[in-house]
Length: 114
Length: 121
Image (cartoon, rainbow over all chains, first blue to last red):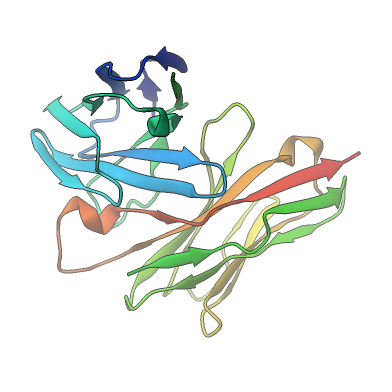
């Protein structure tokens, strides 16, 4: 089974703290994604990566950065957490193939910034 | 740009009955894929079913079927014989396929806002 894991299910941080959310996949997928999910807004893409050290901005990259030093690991960084970044964060991965369609998701990290 | 619209914020269905969750989409891409995901209260996103824009037949996976009407740009999910465990959020999503662009942006999924399904015993 494809497995995507995220470092924490629940996280509470203070405003201004630097926050790291880690995602690891064990299927050698080339592409990895970070989404943010808010009630009534669905999932919105923050950043994605198509290779080690390669990244592209998604729809809402402001206030976030990412790091991909190894193929299996994709980190989302909140440089200075703010209360409006309180949300559910979902990581996903998919193979680099036009014939493989679904994205596999991690369990999510519910982040609260106080 | 792609857009997914789910017009039903919440739905109720009696156990053992069928239910249809609506999804309409908008895209200028000639080739695209449509997905449905289920998200229980535990939070994980579970892939349910996929339909390619050039697939001749509607996709089916067990109790799930996708009612694909290309001309109307709709991709409704039909769940037959609802079970209590079907209570969850359901998201429709799409991505482009077979484009010249080889970057990961071509694998990006665009999601709708979701429909919360509640199954009543």
